[in-house]
Amino acid sequence: MMGSFSWSTGRLGDAMAEIARRRITGFEGNGQTNLDRIHLFAGTFRDEAAMFAYCFSPIAPNAPEQLNLDLPEAPINTQLVDAAFGDQIIPRLSEYFGRKSRRRVARRMQPANALVLIPMQAFGGMEFRLHDTAQMRHIGFEKSLVPETCSTFQ
Image 1 (cartoon, rainbow, N blue to C red):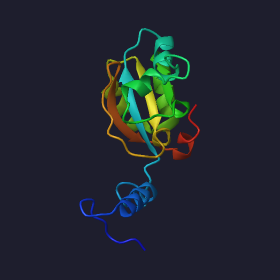
Image 2: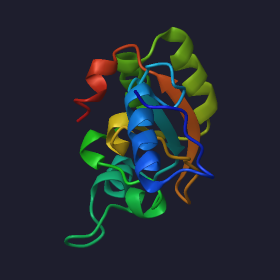
Image 3: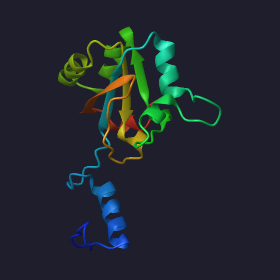
Image 4: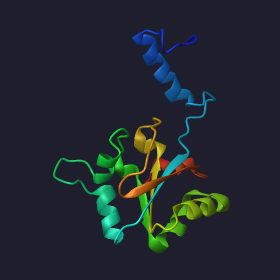
């Protein structure tokens, strides 16, 4: 059984055990891993192709996507990221969120024409402090109604 840990006085092995505990129990420590969280970014792009290029196309062979370059402290597995443009946004939100959450997201993302959804699994289940990028605003996260779908984002 693991005891209490203090970051200021702990040893490396204790620190690693604490990181593992937090991954298992969630950062709230309540046994919830927060894998039902989907972080949301709103952006304005010239067209859908520009949005997809920003999120999913490496900037050069064997290089990361611009999305990863703009959030270097939070490595993102873009194979698990979802994105919607224009008229596709509301139907996409309906796949993951209830009516209240959809309304909240739609309000927060205005006047953007693109929405990028990044589930916790895309961060390897780890928590990161996210921020706006030059291209998109981080508009927070919502809890998905269907967390099992988060592992199969495509």
